[in-house]
Image (tube, rainbow, N blue to C red; front, top):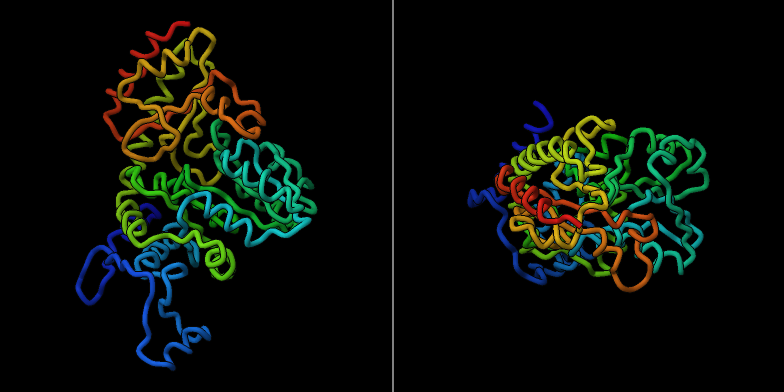
Length: 383
């Protein structure tokens, strides 16, 4: 059976053996009582795994976590209240003062801010490197404790040869982590490519409906136990039962949705390449790096100076302006908006993103309607 068929079959699981329910019941409770003293003591001593308090464990959340672990091919998973909660809780479970992190450049802006504004002041050294540097410089990771990756990276979508980088990481004893939100387990399974820990902003494609904020981490039982015992309960960014229910619903249609995103993205990439106003399209395709089997609907386009970005943005009707992605609706995020973000220097500014870049989230609307909308807006956008 192919991996695609395995994933599709997995999502058809029956969750409640007693009632035959095909979706996990929402166990909306904060705590769980025990039938007697011995059962209570056994749980507190770790001799049983009965749910005790929803901040650390809940049956609805556990059902989603089990599905996510299977989808990524990991031993275990742990859910969080947001993607950045998953990222920060994972990093904090493994860093210590003096720790060295090698991070791919063009990383998700809030990951960059967390590293610069939270980790660095506590004595964690963070360096940023291109995909090529991580792949080709054999000794770059010497003395590094954690390698933090995105493949592809944010905004400019540069893919990483994961088997090559993780080979370097293992040789130098570094723990590797990756944000796999763009590809999902449908198009990329990092654990099979040598990565130690996989992180998702489950708000995006895993949910797929723009109605959930959540994160999830998948890894070995050892790594997940460390996160679950340390940062999940002490930072408290737990995944709620209702959100877990929505994420399970999203997982069941993940494969079908990703296939549609893939098809629309392929059409856009081919047609964008023919437009004279387009300098570059950033959208890695299937087999561009080992283990990447498809193209998601998130990409970016760099226009030439003939395009007035504000006019183009305001002329769109199907595409809306917004910061997130992964749902039904198509969205754009002009780099100029990100570059104008107030506060400390952000990753777009740090890594020199072009002000003529526009990120596109291609949703599930009709492909031809989206293309017609894009062309119409471009025709009205002459600078």
